[in-house]
Amino acid sequence: MTTSPHLFESLDLRGLPLPNRIVLAPLTRGRAGEERIPNEVMAEYYVQRSSAGLMITEATSISEQALGWIESPGIYTDAMTEGWKRVTEAVHQTGGRIFLQLWHTGRASHTNFHKGRLPVAPSAIKIEGDGIHTPEGKFPYETPRALETEEISQVVEEYRQAARRAKEAGFDGVEVHSANGYLLDTFLQSKTNQRTDPYGGSVENRYRILHEVINAVSETWPTSRIGVRLSPNGIYNDMGSPDFREQFTYVASQLDQFGLAYLHVLDGLAFGFHELGEPMTLQEIRQVYHGPLMGNCGYSQEAAEEAIASGAADLISFGRPFISNPDLVERFQNGWELAEDAPVSVYYSTTGAKGYTDFPAYEPEKSTSQG
Image (cartoon, rainbow, N blue to C red; front, top):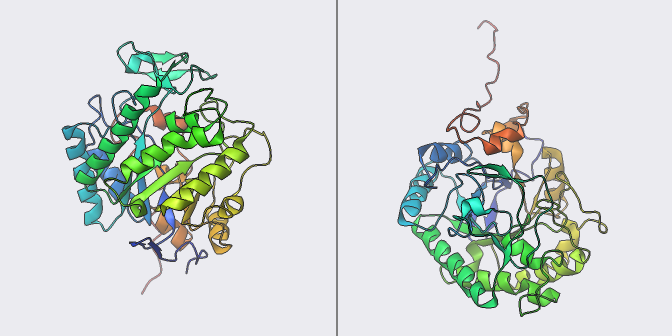
């Protein structure tokens, strides 16, 4: 008998039936090889975790310009689309449900990913941090090139084409990654967006590109199959803006009008908080966003159950616990012990199954009693 009855309630996610409220969070794992084509070991990875109510793939680059992680997958060529099709077919054979996360790394990249061309961003402001892993080794962050106004429509077009390919690949929906200091998040935040054109200068203008991206993606997908990810409290990739509350309250209120599949908010503080005010909570976002709401970042089973039972969230996504516990759903359901979190180094390993699909499922001790 589960101790988390609300976590194991089914959910009709705007027409997509989910058997529970546990979501596999997007986890960048770098197993797609130099060609960035999804492969059999990736299919196995998702199949192992397909008892989740919903799975969100690792961040997937929408174009060559969007690249910024070693051997992460893409969704901008026919071969990539076919590779993902093998993944979705394997997942669907197990009864699983899977969304593709659409990604542009923006300034969180390096010239080594772009044949000597600088990464792009809303403004020429570099990340302050200890450097970035590239195909040529670890290097300091660079000052990115600010996108010209007329270039932004091409970025939006790349999201449109990536969404079309995701449909062809057989996904159940897509998530627009607008969090964690990647391109769309850096447009939202005043710390990284100092533009004076229609894409900067006010909370409304900073939101403009995200609005355009969702409209473009919705040409292929009904908005009921589009999720959006935000990180109002986070510091990852050197983020955090003084007007974060005003900005993200506005963004959530605007997204409320789309009828999205869900809004995915990194409300937890497990990976750092910018301390520029009280952290935004799911309850606060509920005041302006009335659709399905997903919490993330550092949740335990007990905290997830409480969030759903209280009505603060409809879904909770789990990241690192799912790496070393492919059967996390069953462990939660049966009260089985969790394996320890895998070391962060597994994020930078590109050695196939090791540290990826070789984490064992739980084996209950067999009874030794005599019949």
